[in-house]
Length: 144
Image (cartoon, rainbow, N blue to C red; front, side):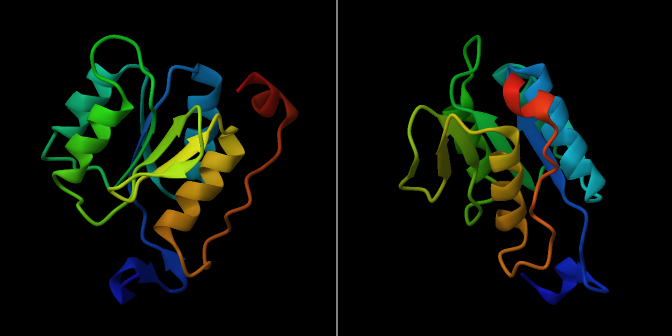
């Protein structure tokens, strides 16, 4: 992380896109990331997320997406679009298996909102200065 990304010991707010079909999952993740000072934009379909990624006036800094999204655009297509702008940053994807892709994306096996939150935090701040422990509301964990 560069010096310019830290301000007085805090992470510079990032613009994060969360693309997931589960409204409770999206809401919990957006709330927790927003509490850290980040701007979070949510999308329930790949098409909506794709349009958000293509808004050059408001670039996305980080992307979390469910690999399987309804309609024609899925998380893999969103990851490719994101990498057109951020070749060196990982996309966090949820799928049916844990692995790292050839492009360095992090694929999490059916994660909970707290696991995605912690993964996004660690991607933003690999030095560990950001509090990456998600709150543990029982309803959000069960619903995801």
